[in-house]
Image (cartoon, rainbow, N blue to C red):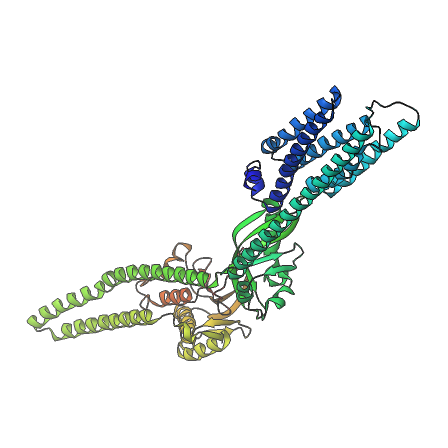
Length: 560
């Protein structure tokens, strides 16, 4: 076999079927070469040969010797097999004509020609080779019946018996060698296929990633145990009954995948959101190849998949922590600035009055001393309020274990009752929409959010004519926007962003510490929402808007 394999291109030796056919072609050429050479030598011993048959025999021997080299050059088994069959066909037909027609001794070899074409090229070639052979025999018979003389050499009785015996021996030898060679190659191929199939099954079944073979229609052909475990099916048979299109939570993701496979034939590391029989969503990452048939049409999809849900959750959590750290760093920077700037001012005020108090004490001015003490007391109270506000702001954290869905209407009602004194004092009418949506988060923080916004509006409504506050919501860009609207003094467009900063006050003489709206922004940020203010300007009122999630944000995201 090693000798035969030397005449086969490497590309043919890598395929078991091509290797078998290649060995048959080269082996048959070798057998015909030896048999034809021995027959020619034996025929020369019997007697002289006419120039034409001798030339044909020599050309056939030379052609058979060239076939293996032609196979190395063209790498085509069909060309090599068909050339071998044609040489034998031409040789037999010529000998039949020269020896007297269909009754000639060489006719015993004619049935080998279709058999050879079938083995070396394929069943279809064998059938139409048999048709050609029958047509040639019919033409020879017709020529004889019409009385035309065929060029022939008359054999003696002894030569004819010897030729029949020799050709019969050649036919038997050829059939035996071809059959033995074919059967040997078939057994070798079956053994190689069994080994290949066993290796394939081991690789297929022992893969830690899911490996699946499916039809373009969505019918699953094969899947390994890793795939059964990935989706949570009770058994492999149950999975094979499933239409893979039903696994996609978003069917358009498979449509995009199929289009890319049709265009590119291969898609690497795509992600999609899928589910198993338990309905649990999982992010699946995969690489899929379109398998095409001989006509170039997609016959199967071969997919290698794995569950990356945990990895994506870890990535999203890491990104969330990074964003949270960045936000806290910004808060710390603002806090440092606020402490160094805004708390410094009251300290300087206290120090100034203490110096005045010392001067008044030296002069004995008791009335002025009492006024200085009043200023110091008010300043310390303001500082106490600022420190308390900073502590409240610092204590607001994302305690997610306590988060759940809450009725925003119930929280707003509680806040309105808590602020009833301020509202009555400023004669503010408050209207709360009973259809406020439910939101997801920490109830205490949500209460502080509404309390600061409503109290902020009520504070600036003091002295206004017919003051009112509206707590309601609207749908905008597929999200629910909650807003607190008032008919207060309004806010200039240039100041609408800065008011959410720490210690930010548009009028330094206004009551308050400048921490309330900063607390509002922090609560909204922690809940993953947005907050902003809308106002057409001074004396046109203000609308404070914010968004909050309606339910728990899923850690499994949609991937395209």
